[in-house]
Image (cartoon, rainbow, N blue to C red; front, top):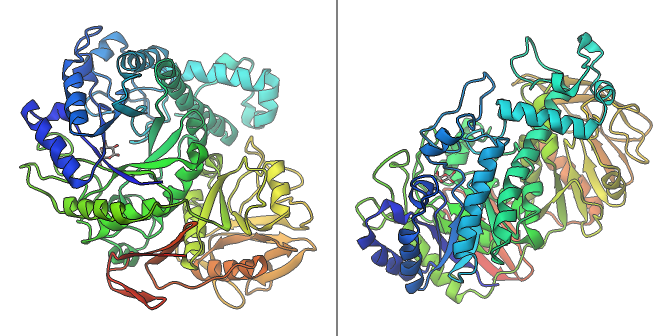
Length: 632
Ligand code: GAL
């Protein structure tokens, strides 16, 4: 499939006289798609019930006349100020019970039925007007659900909806009391209506209660989303898309994605490195202007799994310095091109840059665009032009070709956030570390959901930290070469300790008999090299011991090609475990130079150099930020 470039554009931010020239310059740069509208509610419906489509009609016409296709956003992430007069209680409340007020964006509670209906109504109004307009090639629903920490709301609307959700799920109050263990501390309830939200309790709430609230909150995002999807479907056959945000894990993206044709995400590599990765200072300095070498690819692979039939886009790509991280360095020359090609190599159909021109006003005035606020080209634009020329010459890019799968499960993130037992235990970090370990050895990875039942396409499967293993997955793991643990199958879906205790894997006689969490700087060393950090388990059972702690107690136990790791591996230990498992799986490994990554597609081998110095491999020297591909 031919890959395409897009850009995020806000016609309402600029005098109309600029639009035609902007459109011509976009086409000239090799851009073919323009996303508009996702924040424009106050211009589309300036007063309740009074719509103004004239400007939007003209904007779409100007863009289409230049040869551009439009991706139209529903503006539900920015309800206008008058919406609050209509629904004064539509705001989310934070954990302390404070309203999250008007004056920025995402100021709504997913559970507010009135606002949910208003958002669906807006989607229907837009659908009615543009749903069969073939200049609108795709739709974006809302913008980055969950960004700015907006999934969990402690509002009266959430409270009422939570009681209904609990009644539906548990059917009887005694079933809920038993499932949660509410006999503890006399927490038993007599009625679903008595159950509050798990905030403002004297000490921590019952983890089962807190996890139920997390599951409920995710379902509320899905319900809010589905209302708009249903409204739009009545009017259009164009693909529907949502743009997810990096490391926003508070709702289940597979559930949201189930009703959409295409998944997309917003990739801000340098912002992420400084803002949301646990990397140490040396790593942050080394990749300061490039971003972490695995964070983007991890999300690419995740959204390939979320999108129907593997269809996914980058809806927003960082084009220069952002404004929102603690520090905002500029990309190393070449990185905008590298990020774009890396997305294509991982199967993206479209990479769309955020944004066309830097806005001289409001919150993001310091955020780069492809153009400067004075209309001159910013450095990112030339790299976009370079990619556009390369796309014209490059044969179609096929999807990645992976022998290895990593199982990713949102509920495990919520489970371990609810019951961390140690401040260093992060499910996401564990997953990213596992993914890094695979990629350091040159492997291409597919991410799969925990609902997967057939893993026969893979030579090796990793499922670390998966809180509860669905029985079908457990079975599937025993039929391949698999690495499970730490903390896999350790709790029931209600967040209680099961009997038999975990990991309780078919044919693997191994039980976690005790766990310890470790503060920073403490490591449990392993015989032969490597160490366990953050989290260490004691294992017992008759299964074969493959690796031992220095004190001789078992760390990795196995039955055939199924391994359980009883601790959180450091980098060296991950390398040992992957090397051993890959040997069983018949996978060829190659330790890559630092910062260099390889992605295999069905037809090509891509090389990406995230390092700030040249790296050589296979007799190819890649400059800093270099990209190279060759036919396989
Ligand atoms: C994204 C968001 C955009 C813009 C961008 C800035 O999270 O979707 O609207 O705010 O960040 O980097």
